[in-house]
Image 1 (cartoon, rainbow, N blue to C red):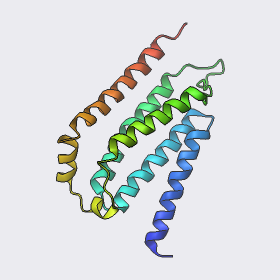
Image 2 (tube, rainbow, N blue to C red):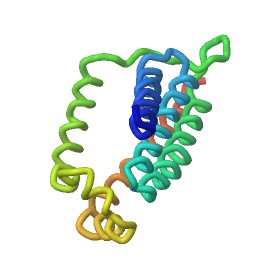
Image 3 (tube, rainbow, N blue to C red):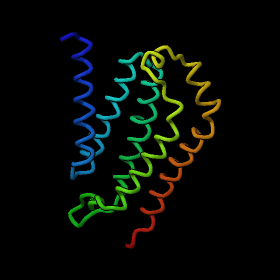
Image 4 (cartoon, rainbow, N blue to C red):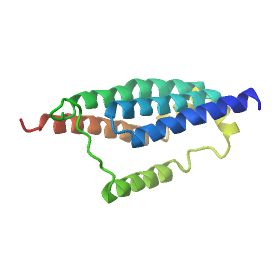
Length: 164
């Protein structure tokens, strides 16, 4: 087994464990820790494949931004009588339908953007990434930002509406 194969297997295991912990943990802090492990593994995969800029962006945006937002939302979540955050299972048909619809929209939107081979992605430079994001993909990039802002506003509104 080569060192590259070992690193790939370790990163894959870290991503898989983080994803499983995020989905099946019953404690919200453990869910956030699993999500953080998954995001870190994704950033490491980008660096492993030679796309250091995307690894840094993954680290800053998702680990530094989205994960901090998630922990902030956990702190504001409604509490049970014993002081722990209340977590109710939302694994129902509506959630599965929404997740499947989001997957189809993302897949359809990125189908023409993702390169056919990893070699093409390795040859990409920061200039090419900037040209792609701020050129023909500017509208999609801005829509993603607006959706993240709407999610943050929705969390604040839902927490502020709590009956006392």
